[in-house]
Amino acid sequence: MVEVNMKTTSKVAIGLGVAGGALLAAWLLTGDRKDKTKQFVAKKAVDLKQAFKKVKKELEDSVNLYV
Image 1 (tube, one colour):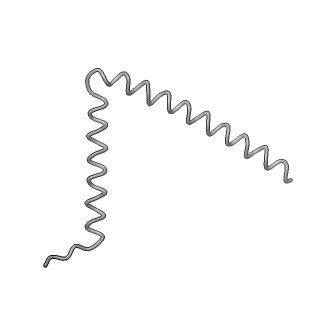
Image 2: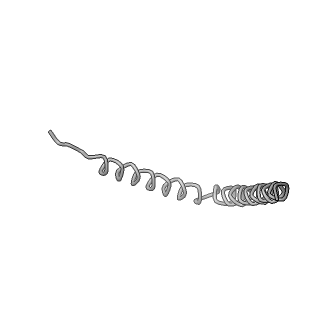
Image 3: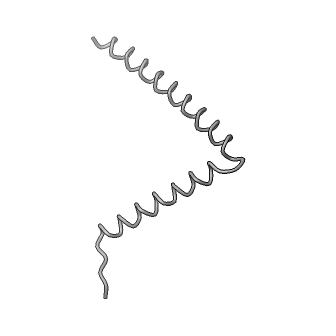
């Protein structure tokens, strides 16, 4: 009986995940989906940046209360 250790299984799982992500990215960036994908990613990047600014400001404000 062939014994597969956990490291081999983990490597295969990670490889499949990376390959799947690459295929999804390629599909999203081809044809008429390209512009929609770029707009979506840009909007989410702006939203994420604003969220980080909000959290940073809240943390700075809370630090001032404890000093």
